[in-house]
Image (cartoon, rainbow, N blue to C red):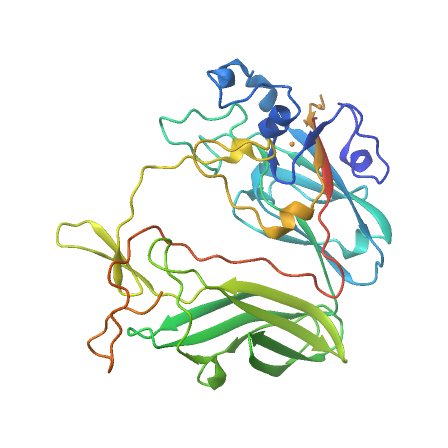
Length: 395
């Protein structure tokens, strides 16, 4: 197609003839979803898909609306294969030599380009070559999709904050061997986006537990702050609810909520859900790796599982489990995409413990299973976080 990024990323651009794409969608997934190609999980349908069309860039575009342009706005980009140029409201703000990879998260300051009302974003996604790009892979018995997972397969979000922002909020847990107490450590980065010094109050809650501290930041300064039991004793929990792998017990989760407040106004918030557990690994005398969760040996059973990326956006699940989608994904409108050819792309109770007085043996008979900790993204801050709706086409 002859249209350039400056046109494609302009509000009101008509994406006629583009392919609709899901909230997280590779190019091939979009083409399967709109029935350009048949179900890839039936017979040998994938063999009939021409690979040449995925050796050129493809365009993705979307719109989002904000009511007020005064807060700071950031575009968080992740899940890109292989790399992409990024356009906002007719301006290229990042190039493919900077933005790429399925796991890195890029935060792009788009404050100067955002306006009240309708806004547009566009991505010129480059082909994915597994022989040279850092990419997702396929187990040898599972045929890979023709597009090599090319596209935008993770959430792309618009984040809005005030003058003080919270970044990289995370929490670690230290669990007593007898599972009768736990210590929590909360860390977050506090960033002053203004040209003036500011004192902000960062406060948090975990259920009924409350904590906080004041932080003074120079203009554009970022500081990491820590809340630990040494200075915040309420983060030392007695009789915590313990997270267990499926089959060994329950998976209770706690909610961490942080907010930054400056001048009496909440400027940003952060939320994480977490489980309290202890996971350890070591090599046994035969050189094989063993895993222990909360002091109990965990036998990990099963075979290799291939990625489900080519299903993203098709509404279909492969024989193995699909990737978990966050609660936000269901609130997000579809993308639209088209190929680009400058020349067109469419997108438990406690274990027995002899060292504890009154040890608890109630976990006898627990069964082994796999282990993971659930986490959740941030809730809505004072201003809405919006997810774009989108389309795709070949360039």
